[in-house]
Image (cartoon, rainbow, N blue to C red; front, side):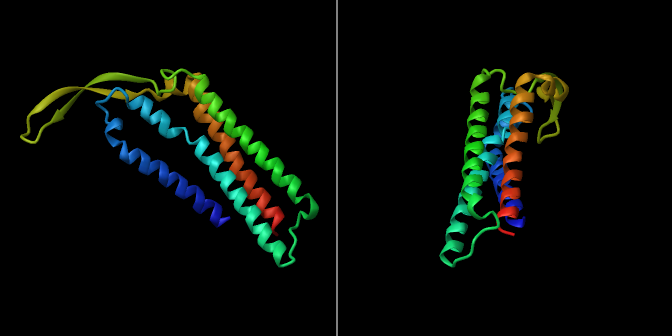
Length: 172
């Protein structure tokens, strides 16, 4: 189970690094902040691809065990389960990508509102700015948030769980 958790943590680290590289897009003074944060929260394709990669590595492990004459706990049904999971993961990946392109670019954003704010410069002078805050309640009510952030991410997390189930039953 630790390799799976480590792989997910590495994938999430990739998301954090990607966000850090685009850090200026997340500034509160930039109106495109809602779009960039929405993209950062949409980790479904990354999780499904991770599950597929882990599943392929399981196939390699089975091949190594077969060379040594060791069979899996699933026996002859291993290949059926393996192929079924690959097909399911690919369908979920295609569904996540389809959901992404089904929504217009303007819909793939968190709802933001501008509010007046104040900043202090290095000399201590206070000046006013426009700050773009995320309205989490309105964002969570939008269909794009519910389908892309919630549903797609849950389905992709289910792929990781299905892989964990498969590995625990096939190799125990």
